[in-house]
Image 1 (cartoon, rainbow, N blue to C red):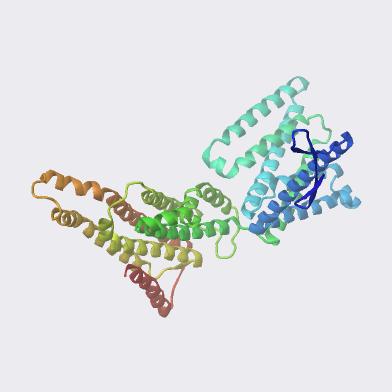
Image 2 (image 1 turned 60 degrees about the horizontal axis):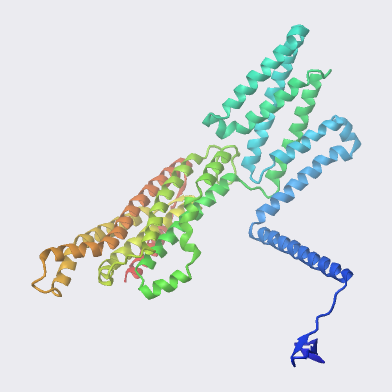
Length: 485
């Protein structure tokens, strides 16, 4: 009996008890093997497709990574010409050109600062280690066969130990760690090559090939789509200002929403609210970029002796503010809720302080992005401090307000102690938020001082147009009043 089901033909057989069973086809061993191989092949193709799709998404999201890969491939292709072209192969000592390719692979980094850091360290360490190695070899060769191995062994032990220990010194580790490692490697290789008949020629050839590789790396990294570590650090600080301002603005707004609205917003939480976490996690990146930016020449709006260390101070001040905002966010997610009438009493003042604080952060971000001294920052900070004083006054009047509102609802027979203790437990969650907002305003003032120091050291240009100053002040101050209303 044949039965067509969902577009497929299904065969069933009748059994003696009156029911029917499905008739399963019998597969031979060859067919089973083929089906197994087919499923494996399909799974392999799906994994390859997912891999290429993920790689494509990364390239679209961060094109700088694709550019870096192209630049490395171009540099290695140019170095490979020393092998492919006979005149170049014979002119650069043939097989020694392998060091040039190894140099390109090792020292070519994504930013110009990191590339210069490795290139300069590698060339300098190779030159010093080669000079010392040749000098020690000359002394050992003129000391007799009995002392030759002893002098070489002692020199390797002492210099390798001293160079390795120097990598633990903070000042050397920050700027010359890679050079110390290359020094140990090069000196050891030259020392164990004492049987080479032309040791000086060997050292010079290696140094020349390394110079060729590092020169090509520097040339290509600076000429084709340059990526400056200093610019990356500057843009990172600017983005962090925007993230702090948005997080502070949205977190306080979330706190004063109704419970129903708050639950709905918790389910659809915007990831941009958690932007302060990027500020907290940027310390290592800032320190690395600031260290690499010192190796870069003057470029764009950054001079040769640009105060990169001041960026670290500014970043540290921003992280203090981010920690405070993180605590504010924990107040939003707390299970202990302040009564609505208490929140209503302080809502306007809290929202005003939130608004003025976020506007100051936005203005600092604009100052950093445009590298011009802000003409309105003093006015904005004064507005923020005034909002702080208003909030403090409202907080001081809160217990009287609560006691007055609740005493009318209590019976005269109730204990006076109950009247005094109940309001404190109710205002505690709200006072925590108010304290954090006031503390955050203090931390923002520290950020303002850090940015002012950076503007003075980096010689930010002042805003000379009075109309622009007036327009900026009106644009910044008007939204705050509107939001308070």
